[in-house]
Length: 167
Image (tube, rainbow, N blue to C red):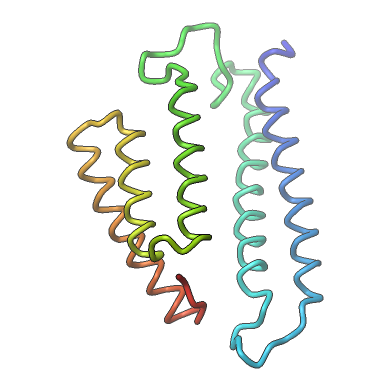
């Protein structure tokens, strides 16, 4: 019986922990000083991220609590039954390691200003999307389109809307 609730309990603990961290981050951002160079204020982006994460965490919490009440019927979302996973969901730790390495490489390229934000974000999106899609042509094409839109769109939003200079 406890095994059926283990994923639900983990989700509830995770969502409550994220809510706590978001509250601390939001409270910490309230003490940031105002700057004449930033029209939205120094704490705008951290506050926005805290709010979005808190909302997503509340969604997870609501879904988990709902699953507790649905558990008596035996059709709980996200609770693993004793059936084996389909081949699509096999664990691939090598892929996880490559994703982490690619992310660290992306961060270092931006930090050391080896490439600009647009190019490095597009390349990161293309490589990670292709890697995650198992080099499937159709999915790789979709990831290329998403990467280009994301790289150019994020650059536009940060430089023209949030007025934050990017490399």
